[in-house]
Length: 119
Image (cartoon, rainbow, N blue to C red; front, side, top):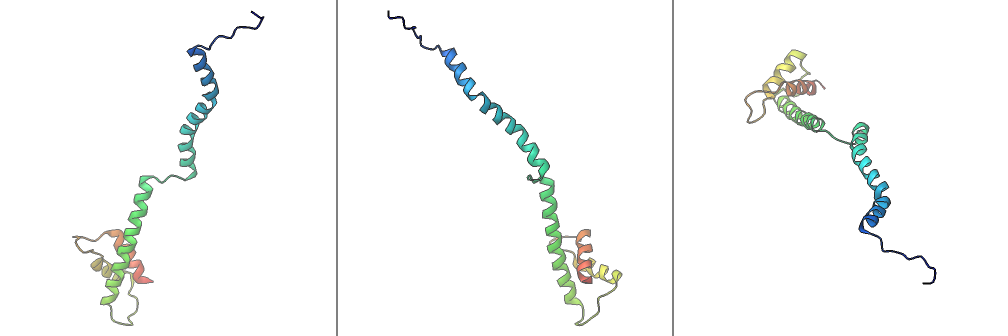
């Protein structure tokens, strides 16, 4: 014995504690990120909610149907005819806003179609 301290092999518990001490800041950062990330991205507008996507889809469908309705309605008007007044435009749009395969016209399509006929 030469006076050197005897080193004992680390026990499993000591090894695990040392590894945990090394990985603890990373684990805490990941946990905070998993909780705060969706909250921050939701408030900043980076997430699209289902209702927002459905509203945008519906608006696109209404727009396309209104264009289709307006073109069909213009086809029935005599060439060079003046733009009809609001009531006549609304009635013309009501007649042509019924899409193929549908029984009734959507009120939003009628309104949009009438607006397209005006301008």
